Image (cartoon, rainbow, N blue to C red; front, side, top):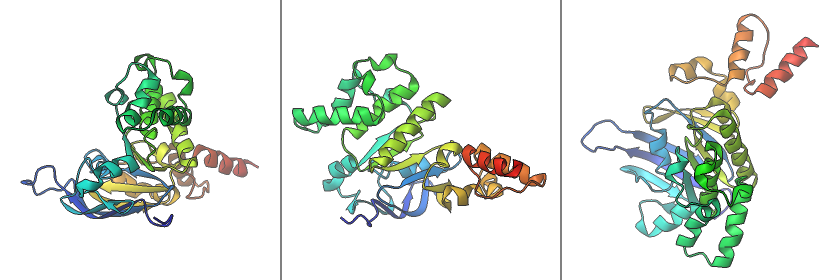
Length: 280
């Protein structure tokens, strides 16, 4: 499969939890996710973003339309094992994903069940723990770890399966700012290692670090673009009950009182840079 070929291809997907109901949770979504890309998916509660995410590794199957993972149709049962190896999922609550009493054993759990040879398991779990930044806690009991550390154990457990794509479904929602920063740091390391990242998030500051942002409302994609393109449209985002990053709020407040600021200011670093220029 060529590097140019999208790793995930979603074509006009529709899905209802209850076929008797007229309302679709995902309502005609089409999108491509390129290999190595970091995509953030935003939307108010109930907009369908988590439902869409569960289609990426065949936890849910489309009622209509198609989801292709590296060219494999998720509805083809023969591909299920391969699809789930290509796309790993990390959920909101790490406690639901941690199964062992020692960090290292937890990370080894999935490869062992996949029948990976023991000598390769050793390499895989060490690599995964180092990539997730949890290697020095390998002998610890997961219940003694902080929320951010537990979430990185859950991420390491998925990475040990060597997926090409990692889908994070609100995986920082239960964490404090320090824990969120730890997980974001891990995301950037994984991306540098060539893993495609799809992050479903409520945090605008996290989305501002992505390559591309998708905004969902009522089961549809209603906005799409780079973080700068999306977060420069404050009014439109507010109409979908979403905030903008704090740096973008400050940018808007400064513009309102007549201080010129470029539209693409969405991170604290960029905001500080522009303010510094104005003060000189």
